[in-house]
Amino acid sequence: MFELPTIWAGLLALAIFIYVILDGFDLGIGLVFPFLETDKCRDVAMNSVAPVWDGNETWLVLGGGGLLAAFPLAYAIVLPALYAPFIVMILALVFRGVAFEYRWRDKAHEKTWDRSFFFGSLLATFSQGIVLGAFVQGIDVEGRAYAGGWWDWFTPFSLMCGVALTAGYALLGTTWLVMKTEGILRDRAYAIAKPMAIATLAFMGIVSLWTPFLSPEIAERWFTFPQLLFVLPVPTLVFILAVVLGWGIIKRKDNVPFLATIGIFLLCFAGLGIGISPYIVPRAVTIAEAAAPDKSLMFMLVGALILLPMILAYTAYAYWVFRGKVDPEAGYH
Image 1 (cartoon, rainbow, N blue to C red):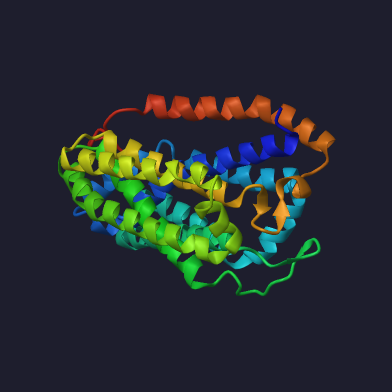
Image 2 (cartoon, rainbow, N blue to C red):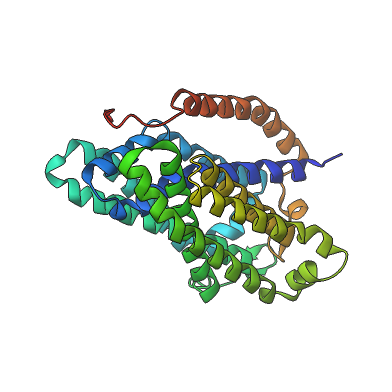
């Protein structure tokens, strides 16, 4: 039987993964925005996410709020360690949202808002990658508090993770456009998807090879028997999905590249979980040590079991209603 802290760790992991996928593809559209050839293409690209993009940040709020409520010690350590990239990420998401709305209502400055949409997406994505990299490489903890400095998050590894996530989100965005659009925009998305797929897989390989050198504990978990049996399926499946992704792009199977990219992200997420468990702050604080009292976790779990299905249901319904290809003549209002 799973213990309450483990259940809550799973719920938070689910919320973060859903956020990465849902907000990943609409941030990805912002990242490739300058490479779309015409204003009409950019209009259709925005229309492809306009009905759903507002709800994607729900999962980010759920992840952050859930961490505070379920694992207050981890929240108290991680937030001070990563204040700077978190603040940049949040401000960039706000700025990007403003650009999204004003682009349609301030046509006199449309190009300015287009550039703002791109830079907001870039800063938000790169900051998320830095947060991931800084988290994986470890946070300096003494007792029950963060013991590092203001710039500890700024390392070559965290910057590489920022670049890798930027390529990954751009791939998600272009494969989403492949799935949702037709004509010139679809052709352009296919053309961008090819180098983005190569870049994503290359940077993913670099990060994966770099990660074991961050800590002897990670290296032992990844390269010794029997732990190796749990790790080995991840790169194997990534290779298979990479082949499927390439086949889908070359053969122009519109739905395949996006689904294959989601699968690759899921495997990366699984690899991260294998690498850091049972810690919630890598190599410093375990899930059990950081958890709130069981009574609090149980009380919140009742609410989560009611609200999570509702959130999943209305999210799924929104995507179902707006399924299929985007009408190029449709507009955002």
